[in-house]
Amino acid sequence: MHYLVYRSTALVSPGSFRYGGILHTSVRNNAETGITGYLHYEEGEFLQYIEGPDAAISALWARLARDPRHRDILLLASGALARRRFEDWRMGMSDPTVLSLATFLRDVDHPQCRPGPDGAEAIYFLLSVCQRIELGLADPPRPRQGGPRPQLSPVSSVVPPSASASASL
Image 1 (cartoon, rainbow, N blue to C red):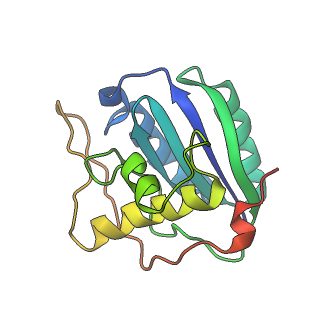
Image 2 (tube, helix red, strand yellow; image 1 turned 30 degrees about the vertical axis):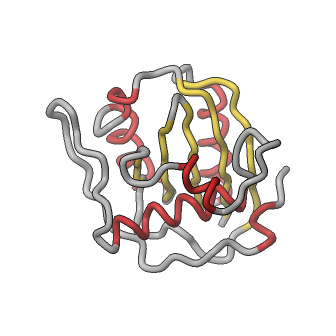
């Protein structure tokens, strides 16, 4: 089992990934390959965590690197995983209406000299988003215009990532 977390600059509008192509396709493909994870969109950036079998993660990472819907891909962390963190999420998604990454980083006294989260902070943020949904403190973003609504299952528990989760490649 392997995981990775990355951030990138989105080249698509926020509405185009909500409950449309990106999310719907990800849920279907991830079910077939055994991948689970979470995608957050905020201020023109994607923050995504994926986990699954080593070969499936390697293949998905290669496809993500060529995906024209984003650029400036920065791998924040990657490594072996003893158990899934997002086992009930074929692909969850959120935006700042659920929880703002900028607010989250400010609340954890994030150093202003860095432009974004490190791997451990990114994982903990995404787990926190799932917990807010699970506890009923927030709803996933609603579709703006029709389109299929994915079935999102809450994560069973939220545990801060271990120190080893921040080891970058």
